[in-house]
Each structure stands twice: as C-alpha cells, then as structure tokens.
Image (cartoon, rainbow, N blue to C red; front, side):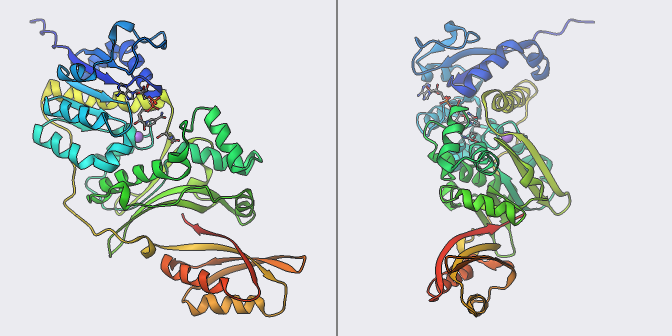
Length: 430
Ligand SMILES: NC(=O)c1ccc[n+]([C@@H]2O[C@H](COP(=O)([O-])OP(=O)(O)OC[C@H]3O[C@@H](n4cnc5c(N)ncnc54)[C@H](O)[C@@H]3O)[C@@H](O)[C@H]2O)c1
Ligand SMILES: N[C@@H](CCO)C(=O)O
Ligand code: NA
C-alpha cells in the first residue's frame, strides 16, 4: 500500500497573548500530535503577535515565536486567531486576514456585536471560515449548537447567564454577606472581572453576547445597540435577601425571544424562581437555556470565562477551520434571511416584583391595588411586613404585564400620599 503524502502544515497566526492567548498557544504546542490527527494536517504556530515582545511571559511561550509585527504575521497565515480584544486593530487585522484568504477564529464578542456583519460579509466574499464559539459563554458549546444543531428547528427563546463576573458577584451577595462593591473587588482579585469591571457590571459584555445569540437564533441581524441593557449596579444586599425570602435568586439574564410581533433582546437583573435550573448556577459559571419548538427546553452549562476553558472553544474552532482547509468546504455563513422586526424595550412582557414602603394606615393596600388595577396590571400576590416606625413594607408580585404599563403604574403609585418609597422594581423571569 502506498504511504500517504504527509499533509502540508497549516500556518496558524495568534494575535494576542493574554489570559486566553497564552492558553491557546499552550494547547497548540502541547497537543500538536492529536490536533494534527484531528485536523488532517499539522497546525504550525507560525507566530504570536504581542505589544511588547520583551515582557516576561509564561514558560510555555517560546520567545522565538513572539513578534510585534502583527500585519506581517497575518499576511502569510492559513488560519488567524484573534484574542487581543477591542475594536481596532483587531477588526483591521481580521479583515486583512480574510482578504488574504485565511480562515479566522475570534473570541471578540465586543467586536462581533458591533461590527460582525462587516466581517461575516468579507468572509463570505472571500469564501473563508469565520468561527467564534469562544465569544459567547466561553467554553460552553452554544454558538455551534444554535447555528448548526438547531438549524432545522424554530427557536422561541434564549435565556442565559452569560457573564461570569456578575453571577459571581450576585452569588457572593447572596451567600457571602458581601455588598456589591466588596463582591466586585473579590471578583477582580480572582481574575473573573476585567480590570475595568464596567463591561461586566453594567451589562455591556452580556449585551454583546445576547446580540450574537439572538442573531443566530432568529436569523435576524441584532447588534449590541439593539439590546435593552441594565446592569447590576442598582442591586442591593436587601434585594438579594428579599429575593431569597420570596423563593427567588437574583441573576443577570440575557433574554432573546421571538413573539408574533418580532424579536425582543434584553439584559437585566431578574428574580428567577429557586426551582428553575438557572437559579442553581453558582459562582462564575454560565448557563444558557434554549426553548425550541421541536427540541423543547435545552440547557447548556459550564465555564463561561477563564483562559483554559475559553482556549478550549478557540482551539475547537481552529480544528474545524483546518478540516475545511484540508478537505475543502466551508462552515456556515451569517444567516439573516428572516429579518424579523426588533421590538422596542418597553414592549417586553414579563412579571414584576415591586417593593414599597407605605404609611401603616387602614385602606393603603386597597389604594395601591386600585391604582395598579387601573393601569391594567394584575396583582398575583401581596406580602406585608412591619409595621415599624409607622410604615409597612409591601411586596407585590404581578402577573405578566407590558414594561410600558408597569412603568406607568409605578409612576402613578409613587404619587400616592401614603407611599413613602418605591424600594425596588425587579422583573421575574424563568
Ligand atoms: N478572559 C476570558 O475569560 C474571556 C472569555 C471569553 C472571551 N474572551 C475574549 O477574548 C479576548 C482576549 O481576552 P483576554 O482575557 O485574553 O484579554 P487580555 O487582556 O488578557 O489579553 C489580550 C492581549 O492582547 C494584547 N494586545 C492588545 N492589543 C494588541 C495589539 N495591538 N497587538 C498585539 N497584542 C495586543 C494585550 O497586550 C494582551 O496581552 C477578548 O476579546 C475577550 O473578550 C475572554
Ligand atoms: N468578563 C467576562 C469574561 C467572559 O466573556 C465574564 O465575566 O463572563
Ligand atoms: Na461558547
């Protein structure tokens, strides 16, 4: 039998050598034999673009591979991996790679959620792959299942905990007795939160991931600007304690749903019933709950952040792209044929829990309930605690209502004479 020709090695360029890049390089270098067998050709790490090649680095990173000239590295590559983050120069380098005929793999959700379509279009024109499994929920296979495994189904709703930092922070507030600032500091010390935690705490990171997931799930172009976004900055230890008392956990949720009217995509903190699978997602873990007509409910769970878990998703994409180089063919391209209308944030329909402090006088509950009813919002349950110092605390849970109706209801309740304070308004989901 003739000995098969050894396949030509594929030149892999790595852009960025931070938390994720270091682990990607380690996997490519340490698992070369297995990866070559799976890809059908050796994956040769041709170089690693960094800002400062003289900086001390992990012992696994060969100094000879470091270069400060990302442009030249990209020019000769078969596959380009972008784990630098940020919009530029990442976008320009990826476009140059694609135009030069390279397949690209990126973990950059911020870039994809803002300008993904430019990259998808360029990849389509050049006939090359663009893969981005690591951009949503790190190691968890979710991009590929939604894009490929569910391509024959009709996804109704995607509900996810897609930011590890905020999940860790809320968990610490619930179980570790920390306030928001203390829990954020701890998340930074543990390396979950970015140095500037704004993207995590204010929901930008989750909104970028929600936009990517919604685009894939509903075959409709959704960008980060289309996502109604609210972070966890307003959540107090008291909110978390009350949530537990009423049988809920507070979670920062990314929600993308399709109704008869269109597509609604939002990120906000919400109360999740304690028996819902998402309520049990602790620490920095992520989980994505998908509801599809045929498949029914599906749950994806795992590590959404961290160097090695994220590198697992990146290297999986590299192997897919390499297989196409060896065997021919191409992965799926962007699908936006459905072009569903995007609904405004106040069209969302959900249940609410409203906490308010009222004067402890006869008839106050009836007065509040009357105003709520007048706005077409129906109350499910009412709890009262107190009185203390002449006031009582009311906790109202509503049936499903439009965000716009609830906003009008709250504005009206606030003007009632016996109402001292609306302490919190939280959505109930799940
Ligand atoms: N860290 C995670 O858990 C995680 C998870 C999923 C996705 N991601 C995404 O992966 C990407 C990388 O994240 P990270 O955590 O490794 O970030 P990081 O800050 O640790 O690493 C980025 C590296 O890229 C380098 N870099 C930036 N601009 C450069 C340039 N112009 N030329 C050369 N090098 C440059 C930086 O110096 C840094 O070392 C980001 O897009 C991030 O959103 C990260
Ligand atoms: N900062 C992000 C990293 C993963 O995208 C998180 O906490 O989930
Ligand atoms: Na993923």
